[in-house]
Length: 173
Image (cartoon, rainbow, N blue to C red; front, top):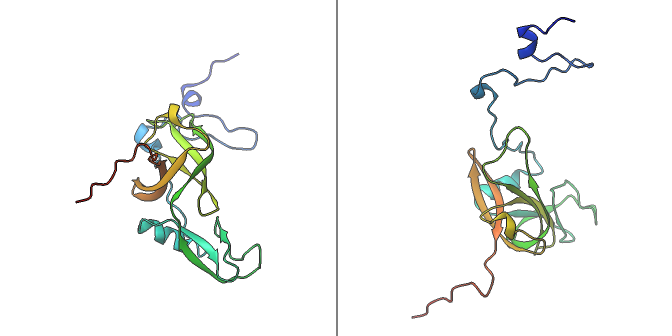
């Protein structure tokens, strides 16, 4: 049995279907990937990303029956209308479900908490939960909308909403 050559130790062999893993043996700067892949803006969701740029979470709303829908689609599933408007979300909701995303080769500095938010507007929205300790994350947690710029991409995110007992009373003069 012969020992593998230096070239085969650095460059992985293709598998049965010809796939050759990349990144092995390459300098770190060549393998670096952005933390956020910029969205591909399509006709159906251009309004959404325009709203994000203006610090608004816009929800597609059927112009005929008034139903909110997300993700954006060209036709209402209830009345089959193609007419729609964009309605600003209240930006508040409740965590319906959550996970901690742990990428095996590109770990985050802090845990990335991915949540499914039941917005008070009546739709569910997938996003990240920020500004919170992992031990404090739980289902039914109240959250509020915030925006973060990551790798030059502005994204809608959520953070814990202040509880009524912790809110500072306003000072009236």
